[in-house]
Length: 178
Image 1 (cartoon, one colour):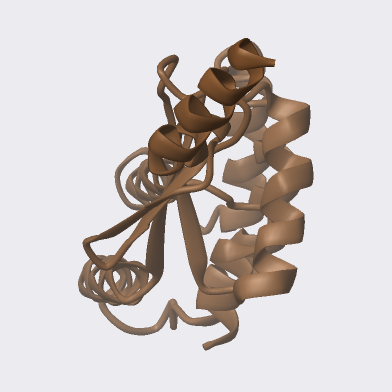
Image 2 (tube, one colour):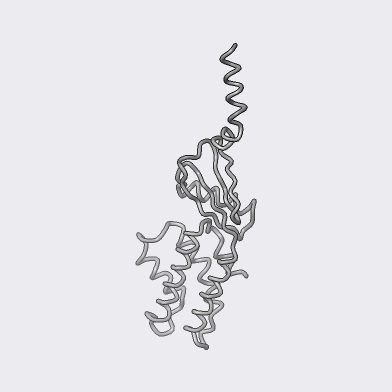
């Protein structure tokens, strides 16, 4: 759906996905329970962003301003808003559960800029319904490892050296003889 696509736009990791779902839940709760009569969801979003400025990630406000209008359009204010909100959250959770999750292991931590750059490339290359789960693995040298659907592939220099250990040792022994 359009909402699912919007949810995944600029969302690159499983953790980001969970965090952003939490933001949506928080905003819907505010709309339902702290709402001044007839206040629009976008007005609540503006107020929320001012209050939470120091607490949310710098990319979240722009993302929320894209997603919240889509959420608002799916809720009919003439019907039971609470039930619609719960149903909408369940639908979002079900859609996110179908996304492909790829574990990615690197010997260094991702900073936000690298995560965004790699995430954009990854979604363009693999598909927009993919989420990464980056992990630090300092034992990897000169590369990375990837796990998807229970299959692990190590593309590091460490793995290649391990695979070719006997040939490397043979070459080194021959080198010593010369």
